[in-house]
Length: 134
Image (cartoon, rainbow, N blue to C red):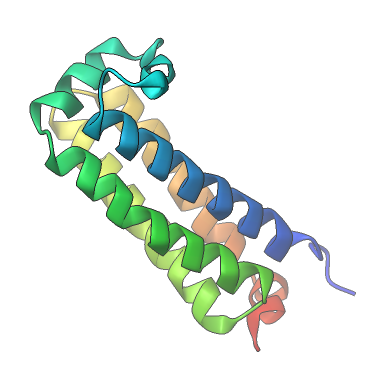
């Protein structure tokens, strides 16, 4: 019995929630005065930056949603491609956070790089990886 039998479900839930967040955030950026505007209450600076890139910021998030949903499906079904997609997503996220270190948000970037690295380390453990050999 593996040490982390619930890993695929946890990963699937994470990516399903990420897909939902991408849809809601993307729609809120495309329709900034809609009922979805409340989601930006605690990050008004980020909202201003994202709206400056309108409509591409909203379109980008909506384009990211199916990728997250696909990663969720791959994780729930314990598919090897789902594991590979998860690793790829966290690697890309870590690379983006690495760029934040040099572009004015060093603490947030370092925390993001650390988090992405830890998740990728966890996912590459042999006992976890074998859960995705379908």
